[in-house]
Image (cartoon, rainbow, N blue to C red; front, side):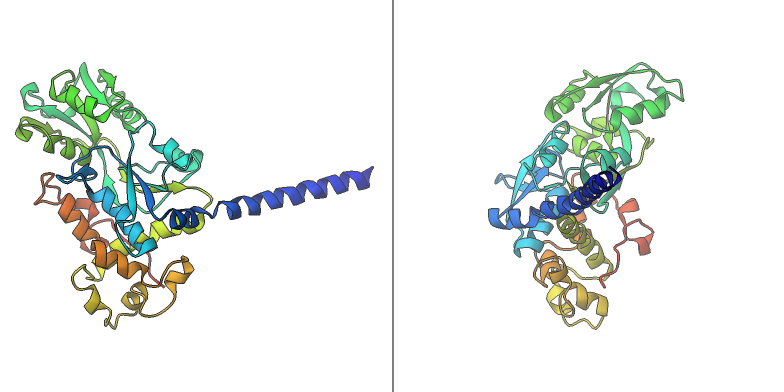
Length: 343
């Protein structure tokens, strides 16, 4: 009997070891799937000015879409091998989990529970944000402490409701949360006066205000009631794909730090900086480590620009959103953006 128990235990251990190693190995399929399909499927917001919106020709533009174009450049050597899949907040994670999309680039906050309970992994943070509150100037409110009994519009499947509770409860401020399933209904309810307040990330509030008939009629209150680090998301158990998405983001950030731009990247191929040489594929085999061409990072920068370039054309001070870099500045300029080294 002891021998039988030992044998059964040994078989159990062997099965467990097989499960540990066979599971992830069988999941290393996203890159192959994307290549065979011939395009990347990217989950984005249905409509968010500056982040994901259709231009006059019906082409998706914005900061989040450019992150996916960078991944397309890394994989295919072209930024347009991507299909954008508009997703509401309440189905975005299910779409990724089910394989409907390959990557989610949709103003999504990295949190502990999301990272550890949904079978998902987050790539590096692409935007440091925080939840804010926007009101009509007609309400005559100047700060959050004056919002007692206010009706606050929000969306489901987000961190906003918990953040409201965490902020207002200790301050003994009572409010009414009004949840809308659809982004357009949510915005229109606020613009029509059905709600006193609209709440989401401050950058998204700027997007909402930008599409108002008269943006000057709305103000974003000074309080930032949470930390909202926004990052692309992929499925767990595919480390190669996670690395591709992560290092595509890191390339955008590092390129700005090293002064490599869309216009000068060809000249930078002659750079004597070893870090730049490795990043651009002049020396080393970093691309092969990702199962990509060694020019993967060069293609990202040549076809999309660096982080600063995509920020300024979609979100910057000269756009309708008019955002300053703030914490989304490089680390050596007082911000939080920092790429690990390319070596």
